[in-house]
Image (cartoon, rainbow, N blue to C red; front, side, top):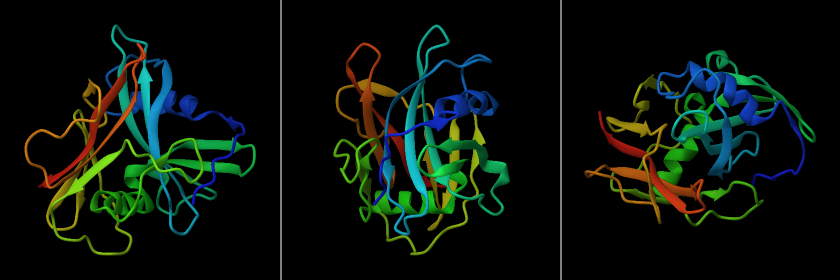
Length: 217
């Protein structure tokens, strides 16, 4: 169970992301994003070592707000071989120095995300300890994924992040999710699996979007 600490983080997550997001091929804003935390959810690491968060952050620097989905992992020490995925380091008021990674490259996040899609793991509230996030929905129609950690090999392009996973399938992380008012929608087409969620819109309405889909390569 991930424990949510009410404390400081220096620099903040949004400050780290403001430097990192413009380096991504799917980023659609200007050179200086103005970010707000909009929503998201967490997953628990069964070993209790890695923080796993799926953050939705909204950039208001352009003519229209743009929401980005940013999977993140937080570690108490550098991950061996993970230098290319490091977003930055930050000082946590309780836990000390934390190494913040693009979670699509982290085997712990990818393993637990597949467990969520299968229905073996629960989405947890982003800011409340031990509280399920019942707004997050998931579905999967394929055969079970193998147990154990995977070695992620994600590829980014202007459409998002594409992550090969077992059974000849690819997990598509929609980095710029298409949101609609109301409950999280069902995905277009007929994917093998998906995850959807919601967050508050800038005008107070509730927005929902498909965040990830699983399809054949």
